[in-house]
Image (cartoon, rainbow, N blue to C red; front, side, top):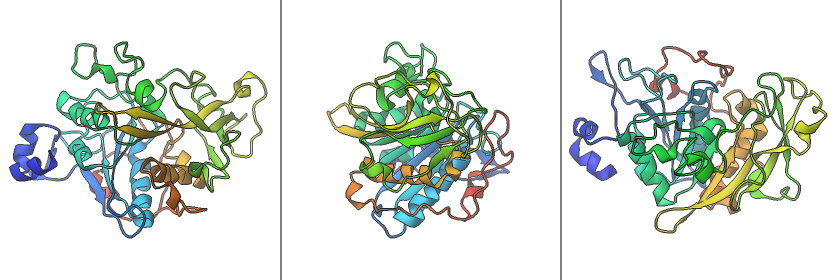
Length: 341
């Protein structure tokens, strides 16, 4: 499909589908950003990071993660955004447009951080092709409820509340759909605790300190299939990393906040999956959480033997993310604004 799009040219590609190109001030402008990989174990691998949520600033988190994967680890990273087609600006409240999803046709790994998207069929078809291929997937925070698609639509099975595909993309592929908040939202933060027996798993290597201000999500135990919890979410009494754990049933048992899983593509290919219900842009100020995600990218791609004792997760350029909350995203931003270090 990528080769066909190239042959047809950009204007024809829009007509074919999978690409909704916004036009601003009379000229075309790419509604995504790509970071070319340098040297490193990820050289030659293409990671596509799909943002699009109204609350947790995925449009800030994923460019930062993409820069880290590209500069420090060699991956070529393409970051996609929810775009207002009239202005070409990043608009997380627009749930019906994520242009550039055709880049998944050349992706080796998809990292998805969307929330309740209702994308048109031609865009969902790009995601569906990727899932049917059995390639690896990383899901962050609201990716458990990535889609909210009406029952009469072609890809309604992906919806978080699907009955046809129980729990939709979240439950079937990532391991859980939206259930509820377990910790008190914006009152009880999360300390990540390595699950007993998982201390030597390559994904948690060097992840001694994981903390985020977002709350723990509820999941149903046990998680489905071959899901393996790696990190448990200790509910804290407040919004600071030094706050003590909450006493009582919320921490007995603790909910998994990061786990691995596999799924099968349509031809039997087994895809590795890593899911974390942490991951808001402010959560990623935690070095331990950033390292968890970088290590997970290596593991998903079968590169776990190349995970160093402490993967380089230094941010590339300034990183001062917005706090989570509805209506609080930075207005007037365009994908090109995230192309700078």
